[in-house]
Image (tube, rainbow, N blue to C red; front, side, top):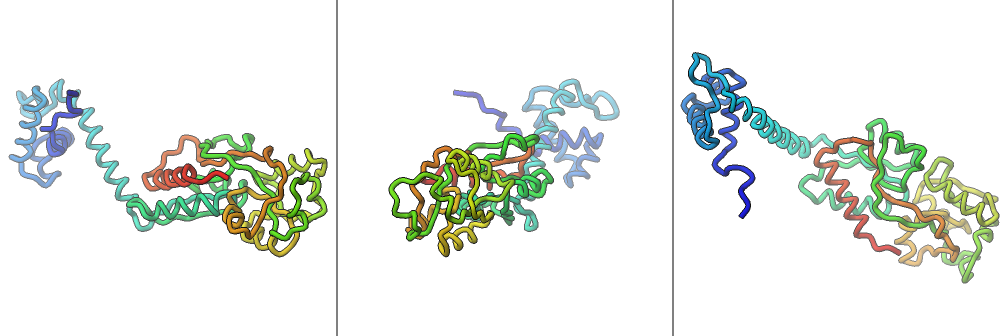
Length: 310
């Protein structure tokens, strides 16, 4: 049978009495600082020395001083007391009414993953106010670097802008070409990407993470650029405009997953395998997270791992 990690006879009162007696320079001052009686402090010190089996104080002098063993033990006792104090402060901060976790959500996750994660987080004990900022990648990464966001969820940024940032991969997905069910190209069994050139194209703006992917797909198809481009990162506008017109919407599959399931939108049968991209969490390198932020990040992971792949 394994030995216990710590002698079960040691109590917090033993350690606080020891640490405070050394800090205050005597039993009387320690008792006053802790709001206890001198006999209570003396009893705790005597019990602690009996438990550890050595004298922690040199009582042969007029002033109470640490023994060699006491000097050694103080280092660890201070660590324990300080760690517990920090833990209590962290719990208090996590429950603070004015505290808030700030999350950046790229369009690829603001419809499916992030709502599920925030709902899960809100139901937990550590749930607190959440601020969700959406927008294109440069905007969100700028806020992240400035400390205005705690983390960003979405497609992996271009390696060229990752200095000082880290990325945690959660899953991968492709882009799709979403159109309304009665779109002129909707009845085709197989299409080449060049065939969408004559239709309005809803595409991400320059600077958006998936813009280079869209451009590369068009170049590979011999198109290069759509004749009528409409740039947007708004999912609500993209959905409304696609339903209203013959536009072809270049969008991450998860954004329109519910629309596809309900038959409100369909995807054109174009090979989009080359658009495969990583989705995950971007943070500032070396950043420490409080308990609530870590809990929301865990909720994002759970939502990502629990998603149903198309």
